Image (cartoon, rainbow over all chains, first blue to last red; front, side):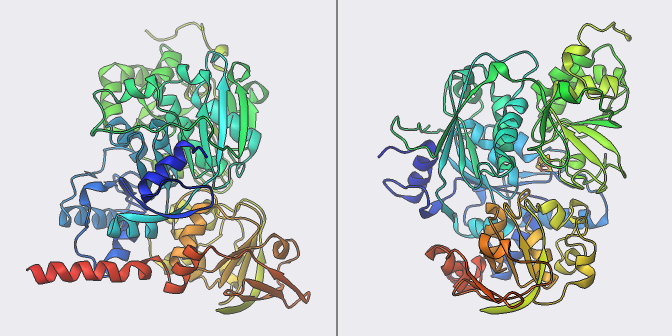
Length: 424
Length: 173
Ligand code: SF4
């Protein structure tokens, strides 16, 4: 019986010939990640059982992303736990404040590679599946166990196949494709299973868009999202991959629990309404809905290509509402600055901050007040996600966010294209 | 392992942002976190919850972030067990790893109302509703998961391995 990519990766890392959905395995982990919120709990668990030295320090990545630079005294104290652990264990992969968001940094630096088995103590660790690895989010105790032993127990998921065909229309980004799927299947549509992508439309889907789609697998309840290894992957990893890697491919006779065919040429720009990413409408249906601010950032959509898209729409115009732009990593920040995008953003009246999660999860810098409405390029819009329990976030792609920033109402990018330029 | 407690009844898709809002994640102190469990959904919960109480939710319970602060907060608040029609995977793992009892049982959920007194036998997976007199059977845990539960959580299950290795460091000195 053939296996899917996910099954092959799990079998390979459990030292087994084959696995099938439902099997409980003990897998060797290639890379494990924690952040300033989740790692302190893992560190405490490890100290509690008397661990003084990590057996595989080179596999552990520690990223200060969520409350960094420290928001207040309590978050500073948490960061100090991570910092002193990094020092004590002489971690090579310690990302201090200002480095950015783990899910932007790790792919960008070429650490997450095809065929690997990766875990991260952050639910959006599924992002890395864009490069053809199995990657999933786990909790702090899981991370601690993996840090202590190099292994973790896992249950082999069923695989759902998503076959994407057709030409990608203008303004349609990975965000719209994944919102379309979540809207179609619901927030638990793929509960605890795998989303595997295939189809000729992938050829036109650059790595940045794949990262956005894999990022939001968890919003459909999936344990991982995974893309095949193809020319796009190879080109992306060329000169970037930090190690040798061995891609895996799904067998032609692999067994899929479900198979969905999606013609992407029919998809329109979408927006997810409060209080769930499954609450999807077309931007056209929502046009005219006012917002108080726009947030362009997060591990979903804060890569260089996203910022370029935003810049191409707002160049020469003024924003009509508070607009916060947060590059996803230090590299994105530097590239955007060197390309002149910051000048465009500042001219338009937007705010630019150092890379951080911050506003995405209502952490700090950009927190929403009572009833405040925000159009966000992030991945979640649960009650209280970005601030006050009565605040509302609408999720959309960066092009829609840019168009909305210019008008203060939810706007289709085509409706602002060709507007008269107001600034030089 | 047996528990008895009153039911706190919630709906589908109870996510980790409502179990413990992000604005409290600048600490991982269980006592602090417990003060804010579920406050955006049900401000009465922390005021009135009693040791032993049971949370009953619908499908996809615990969806959202990987924050272990969520099961930590409700466990510390006194909750003895969570029963739901289905659980999001990370929340399920976190609960098992931490030793927060958790059972999947759509039938028990369908017939439980706020305030019902439930008696739970974890090893047998049975849920007895004292208020209605009905008994329900939850799905059994796979053997690998039972092993973690019997060890008293994931860290306990790996403690020996870690301490044996630590001993070799000490003797190498
Ligand atoms: S950017 Fe938002 S979703 Fe992504 S890791 Fe940070 S808090 Fe989580």
